[in-house]
Length: 106
Image 1 (cartoon, rainbow, N blue to C red):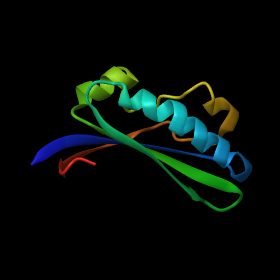
Image 2 (cartoon, rainbow, N blue to C red):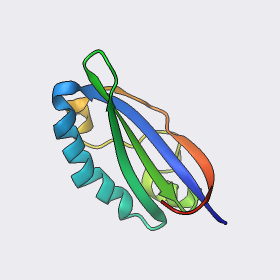
Image 3 (cartoon, rainbow, N blue to C red):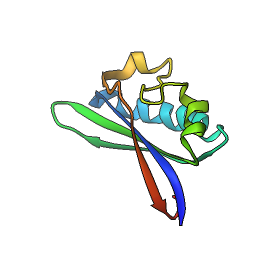
């Protein structure tokens, strides 16, 4: 059985900004996650969330909490943001959730 840590962050953007934000996440954020030793994978999930916004959830899989620290800094519960986030996010989750996981890798 493979043990890993799953990191989850979410935030919302306006409907009209969703395609541009998704493009930035796929081109910049996901490769940034993947470049960190100990990252096992990362995805961006998105869905309409009503009231003219789209919810984005970033899920990443890690070998250990130490690997997450290399990505996020000492306080892994605090979200890491990109320069473009200020332009797009209307609601940003300041807290990141972590889950211990077992089973096959993504």
